[in-house]
Length: 357
Ligand code: NQM
Image 1 (spheres, rainbow, N blue to C red):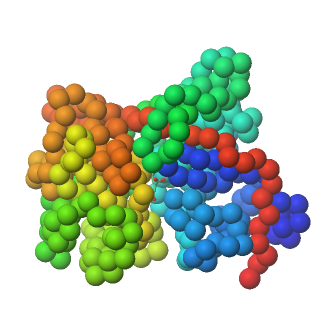
Image 2: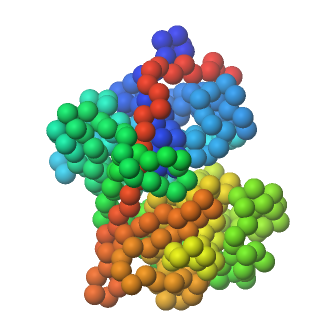
Image 3: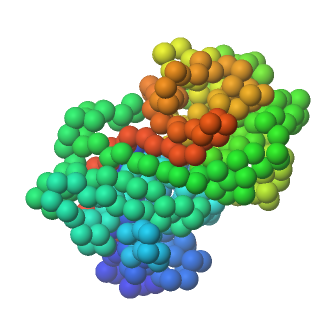
């Protein structure tokens, strides 16, 4: 381990969608998961609410890691393992994927020499190790170099950048085995109507008004509301068992999503707890899963949603909306999903982990 402290570890620091993370080659990290996670805690500066001795941003959205490797399957180009490094706990979790960091995997895989770039654009098929599916990302690569500049805009990120469309299939039951792990569209937990659902992200969808909220409160106001946070956490611990996720005290799933009627012309309005901090926008798979809940009669989301005529579901969040494309079969079942993100290389170099405590 002293070698890492003395020589540093090759690292790309990337923004993916509305998150930021450190990207590593698997071959540059210890192969033993326990040693790897211990090292990543020191890279990020965790546990510490300020992550002052590491590169983490003192926010779960900026304390993320992607570990990339040559693909282990023929229908993909790169393997991507997502790791959430908890800010103030000694926890590194692979118990969720991350669609925002996923947006930066295509560019990073090309930058790191794992995937050759085409002249024009390059489609990168990404094997998401956390959940097992393959997603496709299209990266702008004029002259066989990643281009980050462009005209695409996503809410929650200032300025425009090159578009990175993402396409997913087979997300239902990504971690819970079934879209509706309890087999029901709605379950009552502690007196609150909840949809326990997983279409890429295990999630509990509930009406904000059932907590005495409007659903339009600021992130700061919700994070300061200890009574509501305790009520939500009590539901989460019960829901985790019901969703076959086991004891979720030290897991970042299920996400807890409060829904209310749309106010910006979208389909639904959201505040998501991930699971203890309130998201500044919404996760990609969380948006896909929430949009899917809107299509399920009986769900609190369905009751509040303004369903679109076409297949674009604008999921409103604290800083705008995330557009999700849902393709459904004749029975209304969601069969594939897509979204548009942007990403940017922020820093390239070697990162030096803090000493062992
Ligand atoms: O749901 C945050 C994010 C995420 C996850 C979180 C994500 C997703 O916005 O796909 O992107 O839910 O912890 O980065």
